[in-house]
Length: 197
Ligand code: ATP
Image (cartoon, rainbow, N blue to C red; front, side, top):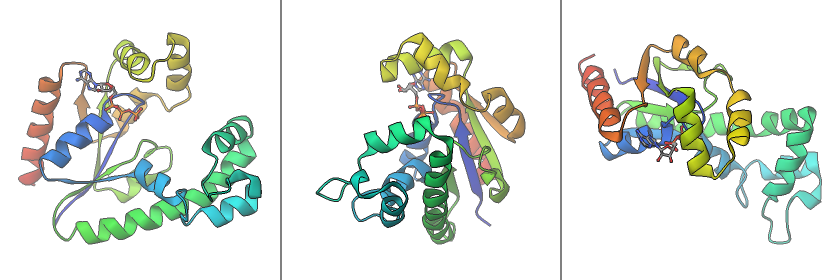
């Protein structure tokens, strides 16, 4: 029986780096952020409901979502944020479920979901792997990658469930405080164990 494995972590903890390595090794990784962008792309399945809830002006003349405008609306309004999530989340889940059912026939499937625990999606995985880093490393990588100030990086980190909580809730952890070789070595060890289950 192939496994459904949740892959999560904190902002800039290294999920994408892990997921790219797994893909290079031939594993299937389904990326929640990618499905999210698909639902709201031009002609995406979420657009009609988004227009209904947020008005015609939320798309431009070419029928594309004005992400900046939507971002600033939901940033300032918790109800609107909930409305958007209620539209987008079921569609993401539907698309992911369909792909998961298809790919798990052929091999293990990783679900790369940043808000896995926050949305209770750990329940549907056989187990969860959390990629973690120390706070200082997280701030350093986040400020460098996204060109943020330390204060901006801290605000983003503080808005998430503490990474230590995610680690405690996970069966497996990957320590990404070291260099890439150290990271890849841990992933290799994990996949060896996975293949022997
Ligand atoms: P987000 O949730 O914000 O999308 P993420 O968890 O997917 O982030 P990555 O984008 O994989 O994190 O990594 C964050 C940054 O840290 C990237 O610039 C990446 O290249 C770098 N990075 C990841 N792992 C290491 C490492 N072991 N050594 C040095 N840099 C690293």
